[in-house]
Amino acid sequence: MLSVEDLYAGYGAILALRGVSLQVKAGELVALIGANGAGKSTLMATIAGVLRPFRGQITFEGQSLLALSPEEIVRRGIALVPEGRRIFPSLTVAENLRLGAATRRDKAAVERDIEEMCTRFPILGKRFHQPGGTLSGGEQQQLAIARALMARPRLLMMDEPSLGLSPILVDEVFAMIRQLHKSGVTILLVEQNVERTLDIANRVYLLNTGRVECQGTPEQLRAQVDIVGAYLGDMWRGD
Amino acid sequence: MIGPLVILASVVHLFGGEVLQRILTVLFINLVMVLGLQIFMGNSGVVSFAQIGFMGIGAYASALFSMSPQAKAMALRNLYSWLVPVQVPFALAVIIGGLMAALVAALVGYPLMRLSGAAAVIATFALLIIVHTVLINWSEVTNGPRTLFGLDGYTTLWVSVAAGILFLLVALWFKETPLGLQLRASREDEAAAASIGIDIVWVRWVAFVLAAFITGVAGALWAHFITSFSPLAFYLPQTFLIISMAIIGGSASVSGAVVGALAVTAIFEGVRGIENALNIAAVFPFAVSGLTEVCLSIAMILILILRPSGIMGSRELRL
Image (tube, rainbow over all chains, first blue to last red; front, side):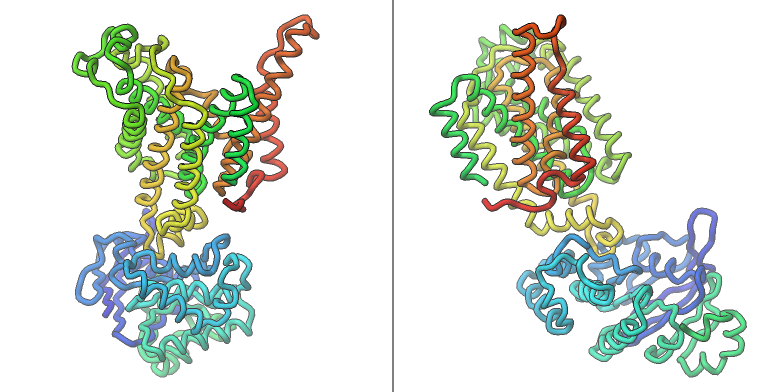
């Protein structure tokens, strides 16, 4: 479904990705882990079209994404839940959801999807006419995910959805991701919380200073724990 | 909101003198300009200093189409010969004024809309200066820095009231359209708006062009109220006045535009009355002038300190 080949990208003279290749197949939950500065967010930004790569190829369902604007990439079916949630705080929950469908033209179906989001995330229905900024951190994360789903993406990318949440809410968020995946959504997940991520992912890529250090199923990665642990130090033990 | 405005206009029409009627007419024309500014600045969060340039374009363009050939021969000796016999009804001339302003905004707007923050302020300010320079030097159509005269006073109190209410409804409608909502989202968080597929430059551009049209219409109405004017009317004092109305009222809401236009006009006319009284009574051994600007500035500073989002903030009054 999504295929990244030999990608080089960065900021000015700084190279953040040095030849990254990665595949996501339909229905998979693929996780991207690695320490700060490994290049995870850069990879997300490059796939989303916010950052232009120096070299390499990104294809989605057989078509190249390289020359496309971020809007066009959303239209092709890739939605991003950005790091730090980034909901619109003074707009209502309803308006936030409606904005998620900004690239869609099918009004009636959008209204139906908004109702479905309120069923799937009941708290959003309860807070429907409240400004997004009045929601708690966990509720805002649900809103951010629901907003991304409103675009009816075929691939959902999530950038550190558990960041800055209390331990109980982290449990909730991971349960939510697992459920989304079960309902058929293809997910590319960036996380720092390695243990939890290995529990729910189909396949994992470990990034280190811009390269794929190792990849495979969670079991395969766990088998290589010694090698990996050496690179990741404390972080490997999870939070 | 509309009810009280109509009642205010009716009371002034029935019981107010000539002076009060003129003040109210200008108030409603200014309201149209603040609404234009609100549509762009209020929804996008990008400050524009260029609006009064569009007012000038609307004023001159409409004048060229509404004046009689005789009046043009008197006032514009070097006018292009093909433009001299052209004369259309007032309403059409006003729309042409708005369209000309919108056309200029459409052409220069696209690169400008990529800017935000201080860069946008400086770029739109530069646009105001450019428009002003063109108006002063394009003698064929503007009579240069000299006064253009001979327009007919088509804009009555009720014409300005009708325009004020019409664009009040337009501003309220625009805010809730999908495009208006996307624009407000980009004001809140540009990166997040882009990440959900909003084309920020495009939505800003549409609002900028619409706002220029409305401001151009206001300029056309003003031109046919005052009937003689020079390019100096479309420069810094007027820019300052309109922006202070938007900021004092609160630019995030349409109601803020109404409240701001009313409040600033009240301050302005009140202080001017005091100033005149002081001068006539010769309280000081010198003539007092500039009190209005001083008071407006103080009012704006107080608002920015005490209520940075303006009197209304983002609340809307009922229609």
